[in-house]
Amino acid sequence: MEPVSRRLDAAGIIRWRISFRGDNFGDSSDTGKRRVTPVTWDPSGDGLDLPSPSELLDLVSSPRQRVRLLRLSAHILQFDGPLCAKSFTTAAASGALPLASLLLDAWIAGTILRPRLEARARRSVLIQQRCARRAMSPNRRWPTGALHLHDMPAGIALLAVRSHRHLWSANPLIIRSAGDRVQSGPLWWSMDKTGHAMILNGTARMS
Image (tube, rainbow, N blue to C red; front, side, top):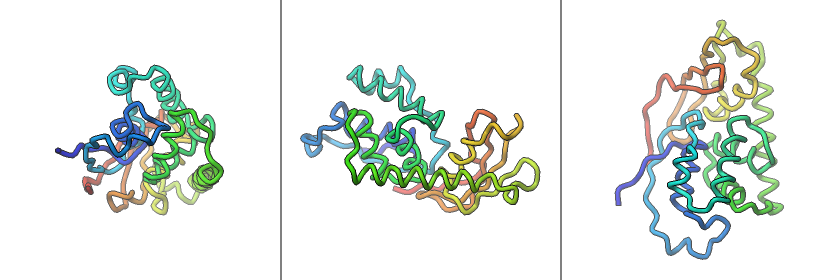
């Protein structure tokens, strides 16, 4: 079976997890019976290329789960919502695939996080909030229109800047970040006023 390519970000993890779990989120009884397509993880994007309603209609047969996925997409775009949604966003941004998978399963199934998973979720959000505060230091903004976050993983850096996007002008912001779990850095990004980012370098991939 030929592997499929997925970006190691929120959008890619959602598409991969749907193909892996089908309509059985929250039910692990058949995970050994499903034929799972191999995946090749590509470098992360900005994580905002989320499944559209029409795409979800093709991928997920359960109306309830489609609604929950659409709600999750809205939370990802705004980085808000309940702990499960916010922590999935941060885990996906950091490339923490096992944690992101558990949180996504819990969100779609509508289950309450178990204490240990809840603690990991809160820790993930706390780390992102600290990065967001550090991202806006005046010492990181030079020259005008550039932001140096080379000590932050790519996805976390983009998420940190996106939470402050109201602070810069309509001109694109150039961001220097560290790499991610697929490719090494530094990476350069161009982010527009809406928070969408495009990578300006980096083509590595890893299976």
